[in-house]
Image (tube, rainbow, N blue to C red; front, side, top):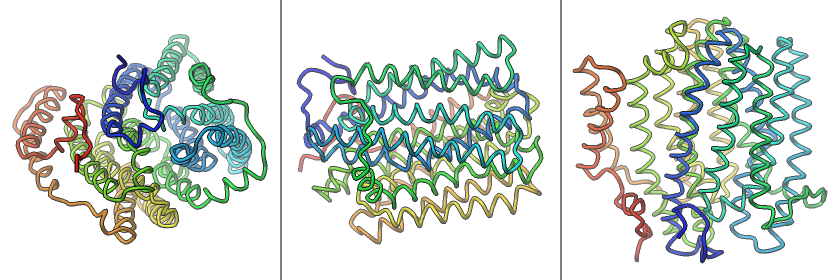
Length: 495
């Protein structure tokens, strides 16, 4: 008998149309989240060594390169992974294979061109040589990673999320091990960029071994097919590219408008938030194939799923923001050390944005499922404008705190924009907000231990968590379908 989220005998091809889909998505999402926290713990072992080894200036360079390549990835990736999952849920047989092969070829062409442009831009704008070199090396890692994500589409679309988790573990284990090894041998900054390439190679090798019997892996270069895919995906691709800018642009702009030390302080806090901010997308994307199928076939099922996602997202987002507020000083001390004391308040400000990050993920995937790409573009453009203007206005005088305020404001504006767009297009999908007072009460209870006790930060976080969920469960602030699914019961509505 296969474990939840794992492939096994008798799993139907069209699992998305069965009552088992919701349970598999919830259990798979929980498994992926647990796997992500496991990989994060690996990072917690490696990152403090790297942070202390590199120091504020080199850490600023490293984070700047990571941000440039992340933005590059968002542009050249063009939202194709999510769109591929959406297409895979409605295509059949040979159509799926043709689509995936052309997607691999298209990604290779787009990403290679993007890497060349990014390297040229960093060189022309006067970036330090190590940033230029790091952009080229990390760009190679990006090219391999995006190809691997394409090969992984069948696993995600079929809710085989156990294998997805395993691949994530392979990547992080390789990366963390190499980072620690580089610190031990006293390596300079450049080899840390090559560690990302090695991790990408290990992951794509495992992915190919896993799916090679299910799909043809050779890239296809059919220009008419590429034109059709690009024509259909362009609005969403632009929306995704703009959306990535608002979250990362503060780091890049900091390196130009603020001091190197302030960029390092912001980067230390940003690295923590960046790691945690993946969780909302893991939770929501696990159910994305169901949303896409429901958007095509059954609006009532879509409304049901989005309401439950809204309730879970609100509860989890508030809890994570609470934990960051209580444990920020300890987190910075562990991750970056005493030289980064200025990062504590920056982290607390950034932590507020994690609540809206969950809501952004929920409503963004709703708009994607409905094909409302223009609305997505508008919402993301507003968020990017808020991030850019806010950082330019606040970072020169407030340093990292100003950039953090700008990032949180951008996140909030995106959440509001997505909600407005969804309500205008499909009023029936508007969320019911009865869970919000329950979450507010739970947060208040969670703050009590931190305010009254003078204990170790870890103990305060644990007590705050216990108090938070005790009140939330007492007020029935978590959907019963969630608990039932985690027990192996069918979370789908029976009517």
